[in-house]
Length: 101
Image (cartoon, rainbow, N blue to C red; front, side, top):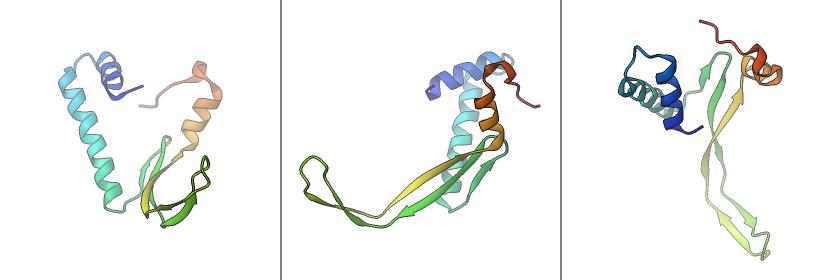
């Protein structure tokens, strides 16, 4: 599912909201997630999962095709760990899918 499909699905489930309002809400949520990660915060959404920024040190790797050494710079990697609720829903299948309100 891409972002536009998510916005369409949410608009269909919430007919009282305009599509532009749903798009604004999705964009604001994503901006807050990004801002939180950039500020070094751990983002946790209960029953869904958590996001954390991890740092990988610079290292020397090998190109598997040529065997040539390649210098990889230090970089940040976003790590997602699914929550128990999400894992249980995925393992149980669609039949038992229900969002708590």
